[in-house]
Image (tube, rainbow, N blue to C red; front, side, top):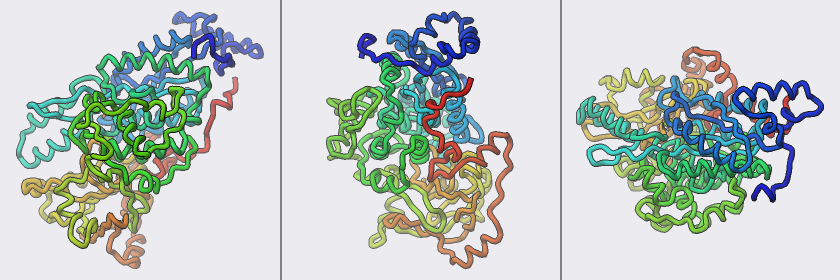
Length: 592
Ligand code: FES
Ligand code: MG
């Protein structure tokens, strides 16, 4: 569309700036924008005001590139005839925010809803990157339902150390085992960690950040190819400019998230998540985005549509390469092209490009088959999440794309009992308890144990912590046993290669079955049947229930208390439950 062919429409911002019924208020709304040089004529011209939700700051280094990229977004908006207005998004920095960045996803969501509803903004560019910055902003755009487009900041360049690729997060999980086994010293551990972060951008592995940006693109919210472009590449600035241009057209077309975020789009995202070896955090985040969009996504959809999908992307932690190779091989469209050819997608659906997903994918096949495999020659044939239930929880997931040959041989491949094994539970109350006791010889942890952590869910932590990928005690690591089965009501980092059973819901803090498990109990896991149970009689469980749930720490801030009072479980997205009923709030203008 060009300016000449656009259909004229009255934007909601004109309620503020050109409202004959409220001339006194209009004067008040207008005057302070003058103080940085905008003219009344611009604001009253009927051109759309385009918000740039700025998630970059010194407190979110993963997204800091957006401080630069926003200049190109502004150029694009201006060139296409819009008026940019940039404003901050509450930071959600994964590595540094204590007690966990997860507690801020709903806070950033809620704050962005208020901004988009309460200010004269007609459409918005969402600047995404670090893990929660993508779902929080998409959730808000879904609630408000004004035209919105996702601009990923892009991953860091690939990390290298002593001639080997070192991926962010993944390098730390690997090196801390070497450190515990005495194979490297602390100085080298630190060198490897810092080498994994060589430039601006978010994690260069297929951790939660790259996963969520890939899924935003798969949903149809980004320009084609946007998610994977590394942050420092020239194409990143170029797509920022194109994103700025495109959002103006979306404003004129009034193409809203509600027309893009359909059940088909979410089912495709589940399929893509498996094919890229995506983060287990995709489960709560996709569920949260779907619920705010009013889409009925079910826990069983992960098994039904997402399990039997091959792993096509060879990227850490499930594979070998990092973000640069992914982008050069064709990025998200090349993975989706394979899935599309195999009939795995529902791609005749609208996207922000103005074309269908099917059209976006035309001619986008992989140019590097070592990095993005053909559908017929995948890295693994079934790569999705396994959904489990039983008397310990109603719902938990396990990421099968990261199951190592070592793990599989030890637990999953016994003749006649494939996928079924029993372990002695070692139960930790939280991560402090784990660190304090994991090397205690009295626990006698061996390869027949499962490490269990509780108190790590949305209410218990609060926020739900990435702690389930517990490593075995040093003594086992020194014997070459690098992973044990783990289970918990928290999450784990998307960069971890641990096949943990996680996101267990309901969590122990609200009386889920995990609350009544004790060290020494036997846990039976049957992956084929999707079952995980403690072999404890119903009578004994009932008796333990009388003793109550393990205590949790008191809230330390007002938001922690509000969060705990309003949050749901990971199974249903850990949403602020009272917020789900609000949808399309841009259609109910705030009073003057
Ligand atoms: Fe921010 Fe990984 S810590 S993207
Ligand atoms: Mg993380």
